[in-house]
Length: 347
Image (tube, rainbow, N blue to C red; front, side, top):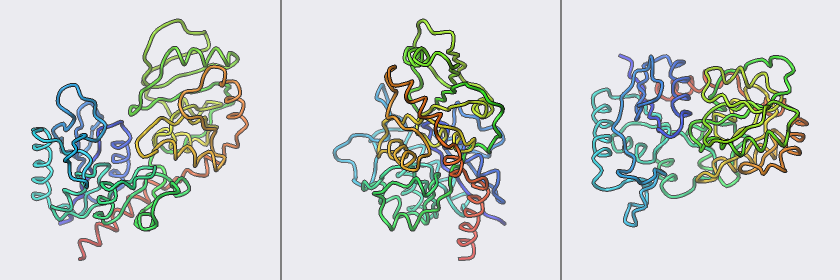
């Protein structure tokens, strides 16, 4: 009987589940998605829904519990949290019952270390940025292999050689490429689920600063107030890739999903990295700028900066960013996972 694979997904943003869904569909063996999945699209997936581990009360969730006496190999291990207790127990019960060949962990230091304690081999997803704090290093050390959902060309300079050697560089595991649709002059702004979203007043100021182009905004936007006629706020739409394909310029953050979308469409891209732990977006943005693949401005620009930023973005050679897109990334990643699972079955 073929042993299955588990894929743990973090509940911050939608990118973790999107990666899991895409690769799981290409795997030749069963794959169970584990995570706190309420509110996410899990149709057609074999899943194990886990109790929520976010802080009790009104505390914000940042992946750390702030306890001075927390073990140094952990990020988040608050005491007296029944959700965490039930969550870890359910993962352990699933592992004992199904004997998985492999658990992909995207992302959690604590789940990666739990899997090691349960004698389950792991493929730990390693996000962009310099994650050389002790908890990350211990999770990386305990993993069988590491998976980077970005091209090696965007690797941060400070990553140790032993981590690079252990890493499978999958490339962007996002939407398939879509051909450009005409010669639109539009600017399309994309906000994903994992960030703060857009601010209506700031978007209005940007659109007023570049009045000769239509601005189309996709994703969450907060605030209220007057807007210029060239600003169109669409909210969540099912055809994001198609709308981006027809744009003259794409504007978005430095998250994996947004950058993957820009690369898959070979778009001229204005990247606005948001502040994230370990420099996840800022270091990726710096790498894109160094390659000439995007115009990069950290954070949302002031209104006065938009005309020059748009001109610079339109002057980009889109083939540079497009070259970072690997059309076979999902299938190649599934094949690498299958080889890893087979190696444990033979052992």
